[in-house]
Image 1 (cartoon, rainbow, N blue to C red):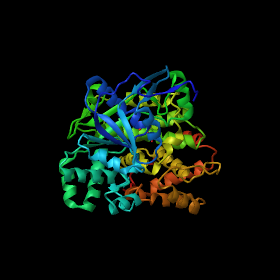
Image 2: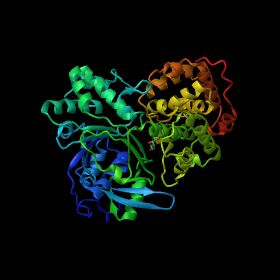
Image 3: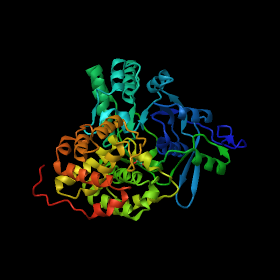
Image 4: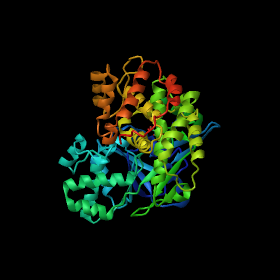
Amino acid sequence: MAGNLTRLSLESSEIIRKNGKGIVHLGIGAFHRAHQAWYTHKAMAEYGGDWCITGVSLRSATMADQLNPQNGLYTLIEQDSQGYKPTIISAVENVVVSREDPKSVLEVLTHSSTKIVSLTITEKGYCHDPSTGKLNLDHPDIQHDLAQPQSPKTAIGYLVCAMQQRLENGTSPFSVLSCDNLPANGQLLAGLVLDFAKQIDMSLANKIEQFYSFPSSMVDRIVPAVTADVRAYFCQRLGYDDQALVATEQFSQWVIEDNFVAGRPDWDKVGALMVKDVHAFETMKLRLLNGSHSAIAYIGYLSQLETVSDAISVSSLRKFIFELMQNELRPSVSVPDNINLDEYCEKLLQRFENPNLNHQTYQIAMDGSQKLPQRLLKPLLYQIQTGGDIQRICFVIAAWIQYVSGRNLSGQVIQVEDPMRTELAEIYSTHHHDEKQWVEQVFSINSIFDNSLASNTEVKNTVTNWLKQIRQQKDAISLLPRVMAEKWPAREDSNL
Ligand code: CS2
């Protein structure tokens, strides 16, 4: 960064923070800063309240290194095809790194001023089986936390440890707000926390259930990972150096189940929607947006298309994604009140087209083993049960199977980020000469595929067929016209 740019700090900004702490956020990354922290900043700026955020990094120290020297301040850039708008966000007070300072994490989690603990820890941070929603008691970090509950590593371990201490000290409870892309995320998290607590003490689990609340929420904003180039570009234009700058789209949506035991910021007055039940919103978003995103990621990546906007500008892929939404994802979505699904799908395609976002297909392709069940496999099950078309979902599964093998279509090694990558790569190395066996083995991973899918021969044959065809091409995109022309056979002989 050019030496004449001063670093963003309380001194260099006109913002004076007046509010006290109220929220601890586990997993403070780009998404949290562009979404919940932005809503919280607006709510406090316009309506007051002590809701400043202590961010917790459960993994690396990068966020703390970037934000703490800036007193938690950072610039949020909202951009559409017309231009961009910068806002300095002052909701984050500081960041603590759990690996370096677990004591401070527990201190803030048990402090009486903490009224909400929110989370964006990604799907894999829940240490559960995505196909069943149950805590994975064999997960090494969960085993560690059960053996040493007072020095946890996982978010679940930290929550239970803090809740136990609060209950013992007579400190009032907080609400636990999951902001990850998981179905019924609050309910799911409550189940995992209780599964964990029961292993320690049944009466602890009962008290947590009685006093703590776990509202579900649907979060939506496309936030690409911030690259050095993006940061340098905007800092140059803003005239100051901001190590923690984050860039996003203009669109944002947050639908929250209004179930807080110790109050909440006035998020509803600054654009969030408080509802009794988020289920319909969340299914719509997880399937139509995230399901399409994963499809774009695997097909795009295997076709050397680096960004979502590059991929969606290829007309056959745009048509495929439109048909995937309309024919195979939308049938299983129940429509939330006041939402027009045609407009919603059209708007999604426009958001994917945003050329300024530079959203890498590689970023979305990560952790597919944790994402596929809620995004594509649930709609697939619905299609099978109702005799609907399944060709496109099966094609995406085939593209994912190729991707997680760790090889692209030229046979070159590719870097795959997925907690199950070793298992998936082993299946590839044993079975890549026989696609039928390869698919069979992948479908037998029961944390991803439930029994009805694992035993469905027609689905496995369809995926095998597409995988064979993908492997004969240089890219996945050239097959799309064939996929779209294919129809699922009549379903009288259904084996379900
Ligand atoms: C994406 C999401 O990386 C991914 O898996 O599908 O992060 C997506 O951009 C957000 O959910 C949009 O709200």
